[in-house]
Amino acid sequence: MTRHHTINAVISLFLGAALLAALCFGVMQALSWDWSGVWDYRQVFWNGWLHTIWISAAALVLSIALGLLIALARRSHYPALRWFAAGYVEVVRGTPLLVQLLILFYVVANAIGLQDRYTAGVVILAIFSGAYIAEMIRGGIESVGKSQLESARAIGLTRAQTYRYVIFPQALRNILPPLAGQAASIIKDSSLLSILGIEEFTLAAQQVNSATYSTLESYLPLAVGYLVLTLPVSLFARHLERKYRYET
Image (cartoon, rainbow, N blue to C red):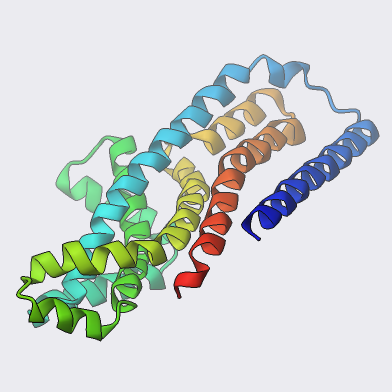
């Protein structure tokens, strides 16, 4: 069954790519696009694309660590920790990323003297994504049956040992599919870092557009570049969902 779904996914991918290529070819023929000017700036696109990759990767690692801490804080015995973690999750998830970027960079980062735009962008992106990952981890932890926790206590496992040997191995199977999907979201959300002047993929396309006045030719590679990054991650997330579906 898994192999059948994989074949269908591959066929759908090729059909979608063929349809997109045919559509782009038709539009190009109709509009007589001129790629000569944009081609001279191919290195700008490449550098921006690479920057997007490492920014997204760094933000993903940091947001997983932050999400784990917040998820554990929400299950803490200390009310202050639970309230802080709950407040963080609600505030971050209840406000747009664009608003958080403006406030955290132009107000908070300036107040503490953080001038490096790349570091600030990665941290802000991790703060935003960490709230969603925290809820994923908390949901995965709470999916473990109480009977197993009682059994762990009965055989003398400490709280740390219970998390390490009982909770985390089972919760990980439930967390992986949405976590892979969140990785794709981080890649797409990183495009908003262009408003901070961070030279990632979106800002690169904007710079090429300003230099060449070739709007469509500048933004089509942008769309394709993000698709190349997010599509494999999305397909991997769907594969994980099918693989671990029987565990639920």
